[in-house]
View 1 (spheres, one colour):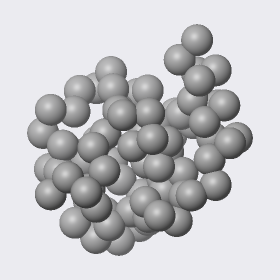
View 2 (cartoon, rainbow, N blue to C red; view 1 turned 60 degrees about the vertical axis):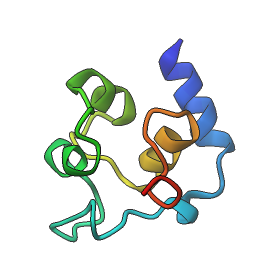
View 3 (cartoon, helix red, strand yellow; view 1 turned 30 degrees about the vertical axis):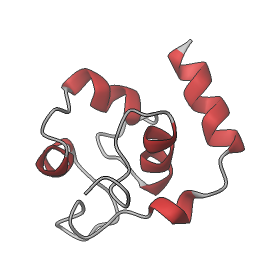
Length: 82
């Protein structure tokens, strides 16, 4: 069920650029966030939640996955929750 919700959010969300990966999160500048990078900004992040966010299972969170995680409330919006 979770995967269906995430896929639906991915298909319907068009505001990905609004949540582009910030330099504070993407410390190595590769355009994606690892679990370790995300934990700096989100210390409460668990392996389980990271797995839910990383919808393609590549071990990294890209802009689209980040936008979906924020939209679904899995992560706080770094632009509004300082």
